[in-house]
Image 1 (spheres, helix red, strand yellow):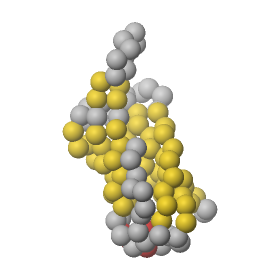
Image 2: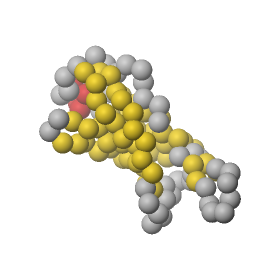
Image 3: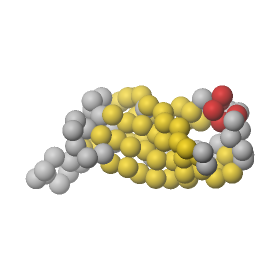
Length: 101
């Protein structure tokens, strides 16, 4: 997951998410196709806000947090979680932080 180094209050926020698959017993990763379900969760003091990612190309997804949503946030640091799931398998989760000015 690649959030921007700094996000601006009241501006849309784009996050790139890379997703790969490894099929047992293989050990090499391959880019995930469009069947993966990918979301970004913004963790807030009063709960969470979830956004669905859009397939860009094999292995690459994109999420945009709308300006209307960043406008309601105070400046500070927020936790974000990228979650991907293929078929009925256990989801994979990656966490990061977002700094909003």
